[in-house]
Length: 161
Image: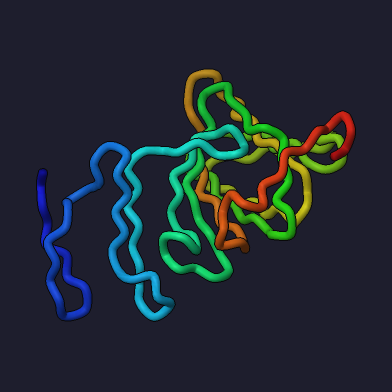
């Protein structure tokens, strides 16, 4: 295993240079008084059916009002329709072209590309779809909920619930 010196404040600590397969490294104390770094190894599954790299949350960094993840929409892929109950979502598209269907019955849509920012108000049903059949789409997602996945609720466009 490769090791690197990491300086935290005035203390040097020997830590893995990069996370191994599936290994997440948290640097710092999640006590609300220190800067915390999260290095994520492998993606995990989300309730939305997409691979996510959980970055910042209440559980790993001690966040009280925000979470942040990297989301990957595979080529030709889409999320399951869902709602974020009671919290807002801000998204930055790093790469790819994504059409997000939203609103009652998912009848409205917007197409976004790399460099775009999106805002999804609390409780608005939505479903992102990667428009490319060959390239994945990548986004950084921030939510006003420190418990990133707990408030995700499936949405049935046919019934509106």
